[in-house]
Amino acid sequence: MTRPLLLVPVAMLLAGCSMIPPAFADDPLDALQRRVIKVSKLVTPSVVHIEAAVRLNNRRSLVSGSGLLLNAEGIVLTNEHVVERAEKVSVLIPGRPGRYRAEVVGTDKQTDLAVLRIEPRTGEPPLEIAKLGDSDLVQVGEWVVAIGNPYGLDGTVSLGIISAKGRDLSGEQLLNEFLQTDAMIDRGSSGGPLVNLRGEVIGINSRGQGRGIGFTIPINTAKRVSEELLGDGSIARGYLGVAIQPLSRELAEYWGIPDVHGVIVNGVSPDSPAEQAGVLVGDIVTRFGKDDVRAEKDEDIGTFQRMVAQTPIGNRVPVQVMREGQATRLEATLGVQPKVVPDEQETDFGFTVQEVTENLYRAHRLSQRVGVIVSFVERGSEAEEAGLAAGDLIFSLEGQAVSDIESFRVALAALPQGRPFLVRARRGTDTRFLLLAPRSVDKQA
Image (cartoon, rainbow, N blue to C red; front, side, top):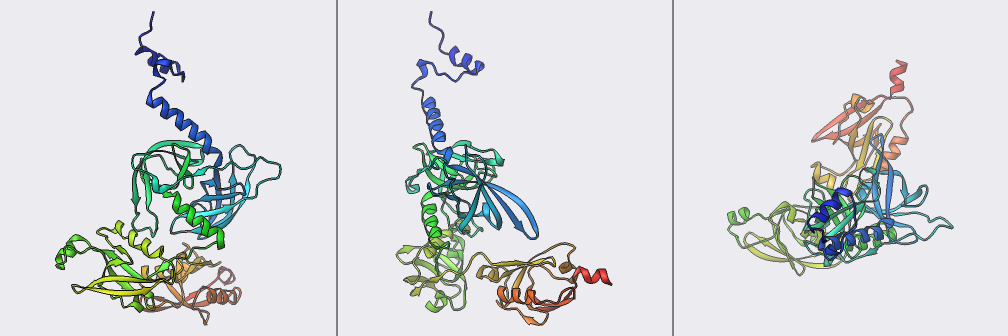
């Protein structure tokens, strides 16, 4: 007697059995399940667990994340934010005992990527490597698998789809056109791969935003950046030297140019390629090189930023601007993008300083670049008691001029041991005279 088909899967579910009866052998869901199992078994051995001992503002913590083995020589790709400020990094590989000490070869904050190197052990089998795909071929709606170590749970696999392409995360100074996915990307998953159902890595997972919204760095970007970092450990990008905002439809209509699209220049850096080309505040950049410029919302301006950053340094590029209703053609020779990640120096007196980069100069609206900027003051420290505050620009330490981070270090090393010293700093337009007394002075008093 033939058993009713509808009762078969119910009985199987109740029994916890995973065997599929012949009547369901061609079920598309079963085919998807088998494919996901195959992909996870194929790629998981190349996904590593990363632990970084991080020091930030006199505090130490342990940060964990994921990474992907790129080759049999021990090159690992992960996120910059996983190893940022790391004093020590170790890697754990599935199925292999112990930890591997990792060297940070290079990092790139603007794409949130980092390259590590470990030394394979003598006598062990070769490291297993995943195949890299082509992220330009990814389509919205495509099934994908995210693999990583969320909350320290190694080898976790999550299934989802590509929800969108070309996402910009406004306000984070990132140059990525992120892939958006609903495959789970939780804390600890950062740096793990996003894989298509052919078993090809199409992205490096970067961050999650609520449930079902994750952002992944396209693997083509990761390939390019990792090659440059493996070269000399740094990335050189094109630089124009303008601060911009989107040209909203409301502003365009108010100015009587409803059909014009572009970005508004709201700042021009001194001695920059833009200033030398004649770009003015208020200009609307409508074309850069051979490409039209369009940005109506904050999240749209990343496209123009990538145009500039990806242009070879030294190239002379035509820039078309709209100025007082008239189209004007300029030419700019692109320079090297200034340092993005500032060098910093912690002190034994409860404060940390950073060098004044272009971004910090603009963010703090500083009147000058000479000096170092206070980035952190510890509560209850000698620095706080003296009145030092985050954002102060230190230009003198015990009578010794401070023009940059190196001269600050020299002046710091020359301070008299155990005696009060004078700090001169600018706070807005005012100059502050702050007497900082080491704790040993208080104890003797």
